[in-house]
Length: 437
Image (cartoon, rainbow, N blue to C red; front, side):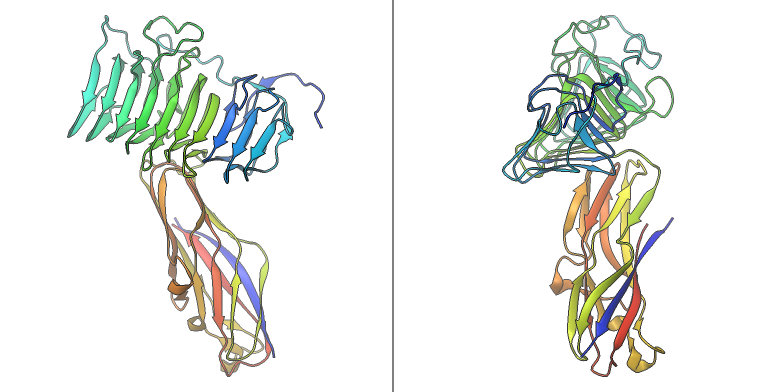
């Protein structure tokens, strides 16, 4: 499938808090459930990018803090909670987009979700002690079940479809290896399993570190359809990704009602929805948490309307920024790649004679670096700077992306026009088209 969006271009050759409301279930893409924590949402530094809404329930006078040259962004949605706007603090250049607004707290949307071992999606419970897996090298495949712990220190560990209940406090650790699974839910329980965690208990955690790469997709049917991570509601242990080059592609919803979701020291995590007790990024500007719902589509957006590029005399050159171009990949693919291509028509005035035509050989394009890149992907510009600009006398690659799961990428390209010496005075119009496939 090719999705296309076009920008028409032209230039001239010259010479306070609301009243209390009844609580309803949180519908946001990112729900931060803790009702009273300071810095329930905490970015210091790093970034949180959500396609949709962000709701922070805390009524603390500092319910959220973004510190450093970092951002919290809700594309196409809102950011808010009962402490907003005053309780959503910034420091040292931190920002929110859009600006936080006062909103009612939302209740846990999955409060009625049956947990293990009662839910139909849960594996049968064997007689303790439960087995552990310690994978070190090579390739290994395991099946759904109840485990004390699972670790992968190298090579690839593949999970067959189903639910993996982890009971021990050593939890599940991916450290330098790869964890892959399709139709998988990881369930973080406590040593008391099959008895539920007692309130305030730190049970099994999930940690991805030291360059580990986790790529999962959630089940599409059954009691845990759409969930890639579920923690016992009383388990205060969380899900953490830490270290540059380390990522978690959840491929579904993460639900940790009492636990923290965190990305540190350059780690990246991506989910389709996140319902968590608290959320934090730290240690590096490249630490990132993305929440991008699956839409099943790959889409591209460009500036609308006509862009006026300015004016230049015959034989002169003009350069103009076109505005923001972005690609959103909501296909939910375990392996996701796309290429954005740019092309152009000739630019003409009057009767489009040779003197009234500026051909595409005289129209060059450079994409520049990514202005935003969200998700567990690697993106590359077609032309990184002005020195690598390319004439649009044939279609050119503007940007490419490779990785896994949902993502979004933006850039702000520049058009450079060399006006022929024989060009006549007039307003020249043409079209630059971006497509993604």
